[in-house]
Image (cartoon, rainbow, N blue to C red):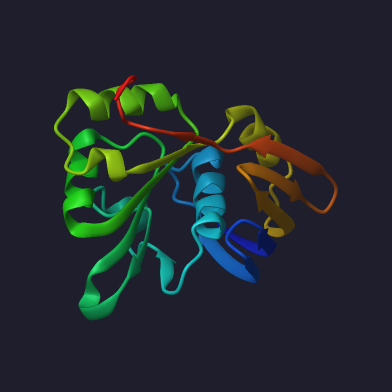
Amino acid sequence: MLYRFQIDFSDIDRGVYETLDLRVAQHPSETGPYLLSRVLAHALSLQEGLEFSPMGLGDPEAPALRALGVHGVTDLWIEIGNPSARKLHKATKSANRVVVYTYKNPEVLVQEMRDEKVHRADDVEIYAFDPKFLGELEKHLEKNNRWTLLHQQGHLDLQTRDNSLSTDLRRLSTKAEGK
């Protein structure tokens, strides 16, 4: 299914104010929370050249989103959910910046990254969406979506056509306690 998202986006902390017009195809195996996390990740990591990976879920080795820089180097590699430590190891070796937006249990991801040898693991940015927030947002998902999204100090306020939702976006670290 193809969805359209028109998003008036304000990221107060980064000074980003944009109107996004995204068309996002949902793969048959893709869940609602995964789709919504991809859309929110696009807005929250907005930068020049950011795109949904051309192969999408069809290529398990590709990032969910990416931004290519000079000479085709990957500036930004974004994963959704709880990718394997092996995939994150590959990502940190090939991209300048790696970000994960998860709607699953983030502690599982953090622990796996601590247990496995992930290159530049401490540089990986991990953000966790509240699954209840995504579940509520999924109830308001339409073929054509018109949203207003405000991000400030780790807090999200989202207005759909008929509902207001709010949540905190948790940032996690792979650094072991006390280090």
